Length: 247
Image 1 (cartoon, rainbow, N blue to C red):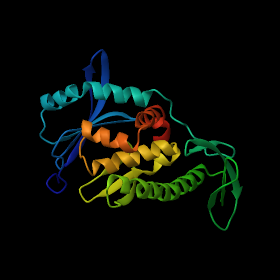
Image 2 (spheres, one colour):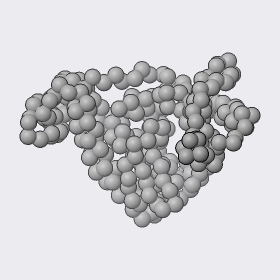
Image 3 (cartoon, rainbow, N blue to C red):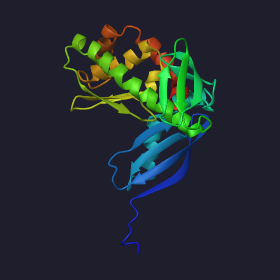
Image 4 (cartoon, rainbow, N blue to C red):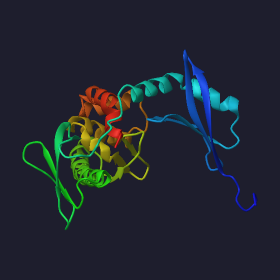
């Protein structure tokens, strides 16, 4: 039976002492993985490692990244989860401002649109069904994220002497953006909750990586030349990241 169904991955809870803290983490071993990767999210530290990585090697990688791990854990624990109820009158964030949900019943179609002022009107079959309300808001977020991000890429790419890259929306839980050698940019749709200036920073950050695939001084100088407010944007993401991601 074991030959027919070989084990290719396993998860195991662990803990490690970092500075004066006992840090619990989840160790995920996989036969497909070729390197050790650390990630931190609302669930804590996860270590993804190749199947045959030794405990000594894994612990060494964690200790080498001790400062980064503790900083990320502090960021994620600094704010409570948003605990959204998805009910009439509740607030949701859009481009840095709060919108009030206005829910109405409509048996024909689900529709979400921005009202004058600070309201988001959503009509759907069962306004009391929280998952349906959430799904409608997420769909609305994604639609506006696609158009907003595409417009900002089109605005900033020429200033960096770049052809306009292809845009894809990301649902990652631990990063706001990424790019690759195919000149594709992925931006997290949850960013549409942030201020426009913060969105612009993330757009410029990923475009700059198409020129400098690192975080060298030259990279940050390039970012600052287009986005001089980037430090403020980083502060917003550090301050509000958990809230934005928790949807």
